[in-house]
Image (cartoon, rainbow, N blue to C red):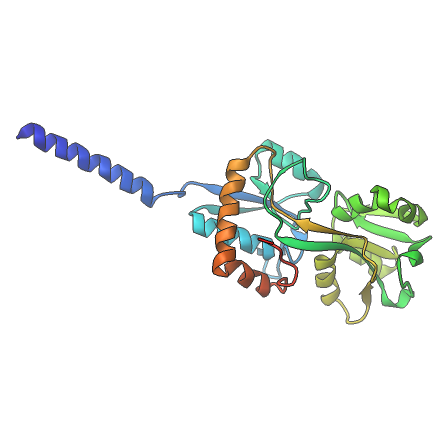
Length: 261
């Protein structure tokens, strides 16, 4: 009888441990997202000093569903690879272009269709890319727009500029454009729309002929399929139950999303 009681007690203790583990699933797991804090609407600091954006909202929803704690880690965009390689961040999730980087990271499925465009002052009279000949063009360091301009397809276009100036962020580039220090900015269309909407109406325009078209994904350290698969699984759940589109609509990006296509 005594042996039976001891056995039952041991089983109860084991059951308690199992239940406890189940209840605390993911409790100690942090998920650190690296992002450019000056890249609205995907990730940026709002007027209240809080980090927000479409990508950060997606990451927050993933974490809530998986029981993880989200850590929003702003990074210098030109240091993103060292941050990822060192383990300081778990992924790069911030309007991160897959095209041209396919073999450099372990990628999620594409979730946003994006284009690279040129923004100019409406008063400049620049109508198309041909009008950029002899002009000073700004671009963000280590950006997709820079990669597009330096690609083989745009060799002649790049050579036509007076110079291509690289800035650390697009806020600085727009300040230069407003002051007339540069004539155009090459950048993501989503970010361009936000920047233009935040300034005087009709002051800036996007040229109709796009520089390039691309897709965004979540970039993980090469070989980290395990974490990628967890995030991907949850994003697909969000797509199926409508939460993904709900978040996209809140940021007016519903026309650009492509997850599951």
